[in-house]
Length: 485
Length: 95
Image 1 (tube, rainbow over the protein chains, first blue to last red):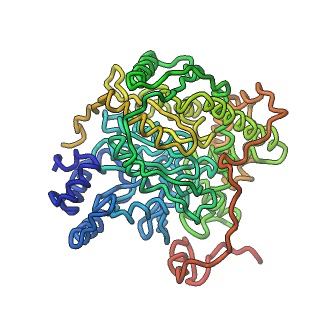
Image 2: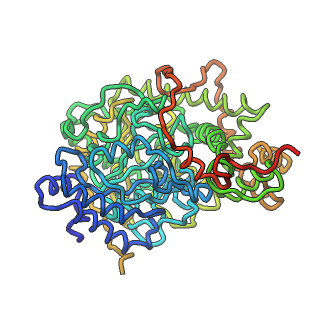
Image 3: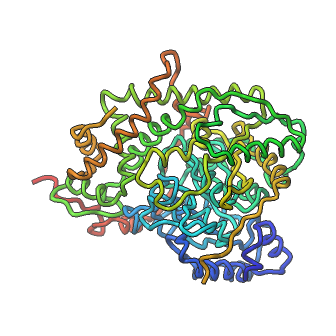
């Protein structure tokens, strides 16, 4: 079976088109491996028997013109899937069965893919280690006891553990790119407005974006092509001409100007991250690109800005969980008491923390000092990128300030956990696209990623740079299947 | 900036999240360290900066308010923790 689960999306799709493999064979192979991989705790809900039925049905009358013909896929449990439980990693949605399908997942099914199940994530996508999930930690396939990153931790672990050939995550402050970096996989956060937010459990609406995660850049490009569509159901979806990313993919990046921002050289960054960055610079030079030093002067203000804007939006978005229309309800003496107990028992500690931060910064007397201030600094951060993009086509940085850490290591210190997203958060604040690609290993053999940030709507450009670099890097993940007995 | 217990209780009320003494103390500690981190923004002078409200440089589109879903009343009610088949049920509000 491993000869099936080890294949990339591109190769599986080709094998289906050539009739060398059936959808049923592929689906069963991933299910069998998933069954043996319970210890990773990647799934919140499995939909295996339906998946086999759908695969059989696909094989009876296969449409081989589709982009994901009969390909089984597990997705982050933040996407609403019609008639399949969607929890957002929270107790408060433990029994929630959506009556509708998110646009992004609908796009995937429309291209022939089959749902395997729903993957673990930090509660309401608030976290950088998957430790805030009500459904427990996820193990990183790289090593036992290691976090897979977050919030799309289950997605990253299922992908690198070969339980799904590709997957999707969401990225509000780094939730696709950081776990991709921690698991040696590729993750793209598209431009704000590129993928519909319809049917995605909302966290911070001005920052949230869905995006593809894959084993390689080509698969990532193909999945982005499928999920990025203009959608009238999302009023912030943007109508622009989308590329056929996988077809237009090229390794020719000669003459491209790549910016290196000096402010990303942060205090206390491990030497191996600096060395990895230097290697990355050499790789793009070897591809014929030109390196240009740039400055993004307000970088150090990005995280404090994010920790006002994101909780403020979250406190408003999560007001809907009141124990009335859906989800968990606690008993209360009266209506208000019921609300307060429901939210106190239904939300985990990190979610409560963020709702309270958000409520505070939006409350009377503090709005100007915090929320308005943060929106102004957000403008300055966006201006920094606009200025830099007058001189360069893309920007190269490390994806994270460290490799994956141990489960429990940062759980009790929220600020140190937040620092994980120092290189990814500015991108969300400015609404730009960015991709993380695996680029090397640290001394423990854990993967490290590099991030390429693009201009708005220039996903093709950063995919091309990643594609060219991937060839030079020739990264191999050291996964021993330690969890399979 | 340090956040005291009184403030925590005020925010908990606004957030409709009940907190007991122990939880309030832990929250005061966590929020104080987070706000200390956030205070860094005060180093920047932003007097002449326009706030950014949306990164998408397009204006929101209008659409007509039409019902698109059909006959999903039962499914919707089914997700409710307590219902009487036709309505959502809440604890008594009017005596």
